[in-house]
Image (tube, rainbow, N blue to C red; front, side, top):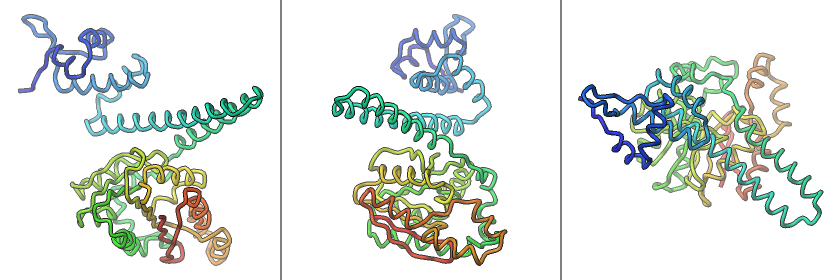
Amino acid sequence: MREEYTISQIAEMFNITTNKIRFYEKKGLLVPIRQNDNKYRKFNEEDIVRLQSILLYRSIGLSIDVIKNILKNNEKENYLTHFNNQWKLVNDEIHRLNVIRKSLEVVIDKIYEETEDYKIKDDLLEIIKESNKLNNIKNEWKDKWNFNGWAKSYDDDVKKDNGELKIYKNYELILQSVYELVEKLDRKNSKILEIGVGTGNLASKFLNNNYEIIGIDQSREMLSVAKEKYPKLKVRLGEFLKIPYDNKSFDIIISTYAFHHLNENEKCIAIQEMIRVLKDNGAVIIGDLMFESKDSEEKILKDLSQEQIDEIKDEYYSYINLLRDEFSKYNKKLEYTRIDKFNYIIKIQ
């Protein structure tokens, strides 16, 4: 038998008034069960989930009509999809507000420091412009590679390595090398974040050796495959540009075959994000498609067919010299190892 709750019990559960619940019922957001004998309201588990969603959406300023439409669209979704949607919504809002807060800090400092009104106004316009630009970059990234559609066949496709460039020929070596670099750090009790966890192949190496690891990915289907393969692996929706964790949360950040899906501007923001969630003495280890510099890229491209060049241009290969410069802004040093013509492993500390 399904458990049912009174309006008073629900109000106490969420620390709200019964009048607020009645208001949401009046607006059509809640439809509790009415008992035939006394017409008292009764609420079930689905009502609790629904009310939790309503309160969350109201807390970030959504109107009743907008919430009604969201809930209507969510009726066909399962609990996991439902709460993943909320997770993403909350994380997006946190990042948006953090950008605004940082901008306000700069504005306040400028007002204190500047004596000329016209300079303050010019500074304000520039600060607003930059904060809007940052939020736009964070929000405009699109998965043009369709990882949701690729998730089920990803592992098989990596083994087949059908591309012209054979970028996966050292796939296992790269994963193992990243793992061994972490081992050499000798931080067995470290908390590790993998960005772009995919189907969990790298994370499993750490999971099997009792490391505490969390994997994030922007693809829900990739997360589903990873969780199916490794039930004990903790996974969350997330991406380089909006890492869903607090400052200084992780000792080590790892990633393979993911960073090349960001353009140069996005890479700079991703580096800032990784540094934000990394502890002061932490390390970042990335295995990915790279060139040492633009000059080295030009030399390599001269020996490739047009089809191979087109395959490269479909991605955003990193330039190690530019990554070194970017990480140096945060007093981090970069070391690298070349695995093959296109794959490198970089370690940042």
